[in-house]
Every structure is written in structure tokens, then in C-alpha cells.
Length: 78
Image 1 (cartoon, one colour):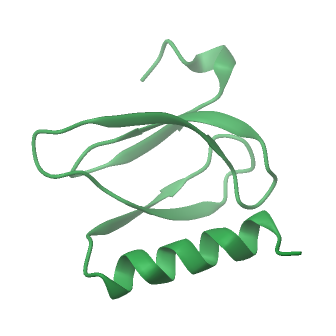
Image 2 (cartoon, helix red, strand yellow):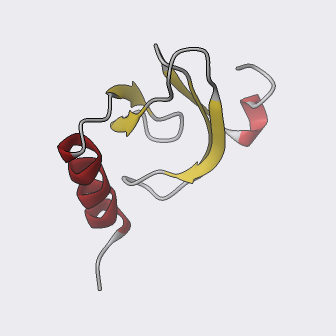
């Protein structure tokens, strides 16, 4: 059985192999680096995600130039 971190690593490898743009951001839960793909300029993607390091669920907002993560207690502060 694969771990969440292993699935995350495989996903990022595939995203990069397909040539998608990625950015690194710090998680709001354990303050570790996470890399993820970003949307095209002008688009905003938001979703609930699980941290690949500590498995905490948080709210992620991705823009072409930055990605931010917010815990439920600070979700009103994007």
C-alpha cells in the first residue's frame, strides 16, 4: 500500500513530465514545502487538500503566481 506522500510524489513527477507549471509553497499545518501545479493566468483554483507530510486537511488557493494554504481557523484570511 502506498502512502499519501508517495502518491503525492508520483503525481508531481507526472505533472512535471507533462510540462505543467508548478510552484512551491509552505503548508499552513506543518510549515513544510509542497509543490503543486498552478492554473493559467487569470484563473483561480481552490480546494480542500491533505498535506502529504502530516495529512492535515486545509484549504488551498492557487493562482498563476502563488499558492496559499489556510487552516479552517484562518480560512477567512486568504
